[in-house]
Image (cartoon, rainbow, N blue to C red):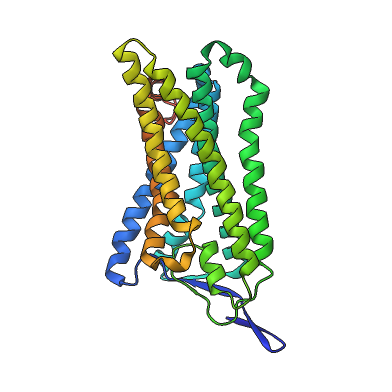
Length: 317
């Protein structure tokens, strides 16, 4: 539907084409993404519950992990439920207001993940390189600040992009070849001049990627240097194993964001954009619980306690 304003026609809704145009693939996609969504929600939900109920896990590292898990649950919830509903109802439309809202929150949670990865790397840097001063440096006030800052900054970034986007006019087409309202595609679809928007996207995107990644790089250079000075092989392996798990997620997360958002969207085929978006909005939130927590002895112990307490089952007489 279009709304006429004088000689201009503005879009009141968009059409999301989804991941595939083939009808026979829709059932497969529905089952696949429903499964990934449920795994993500259950996995991250268990992490948050275990951390909140086990006083042994009330430490900075697990506070940041709980924040990351909540951000991951929120991130996948901005796009996948809408996509599943579209497949089920065979409706691909989304209102202009809903599209802008979806874009806003997708930016918020991507930026939060970004900054939290840097914060978690810094926490490990302090723990490994300055163990005697860890409690002094990572005191409660600092931990709360490091947890709140990502949420504030992410909303500022999302609000900036949103306020610039709503100034644009969409008049020629309302078809988005994606499964959610992506900022880069919306800019490409607009018939207004998007030079300012593209510039802000580049500058803000560069800052959001560069500063957390620089913090991660700084932290791990010092961590590796400290680990190499450990005398026992067992100690070195334990430390490097932890670093390897974190770096796996870092490479997956940053690699896909750089490929999809950092470079101009016109240089990428639609399928590449979709694959990249699925990786960091669906796959990464799903595997984070396994990489960060389910391989962690303390977390395994907390989850066992959770199951033994039968927290999910009604009390038996």
